[in-house]
Image (cartoon, rainbow, N blue to C red; front, top):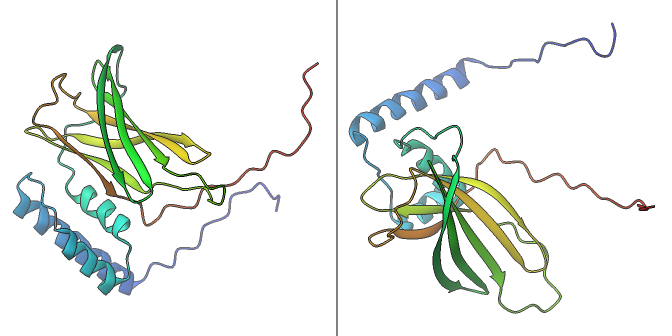
Length: 201
């Protein structure tokens, strides 16, 4: 048999797993029926208690609850044409880091919001930091927020969030927060080391 031939992936699904999955689906249907399209979210103390009791980190619990609360409008295939840039300039300091929502790129269908995170005091002895955060937008309308990208290094990082529908140009009445957020199935990023000499002739 050639190495390129496909092999059947072993499926060890059993009655025990089936019973758990059926329970999850039943609970999901009950929650959906009770919520009637509204968002329900527990207090921080409840999240902490669940984290301790079940051994699941708060960012992973938030990921699950946000998934269950998703009654947002369908995300458009693309943000559409860029129409203008809207300053936000909301800044706060938590611990050793400064967080700034700098601006939103206002596209035809969606907004892309930029968040900068900086380590306040660089002492030369810090490692890379990976924010497990999601932007939460509260207002009279329901907004769907998705991580859109991240970059950084040297004590700072920038995260972008795709928001639909598009944010209004007047942000009065809107409230922004960064909440702990991480998929329990998220794999650590693959590290690629570039260490070969590169010549530009």
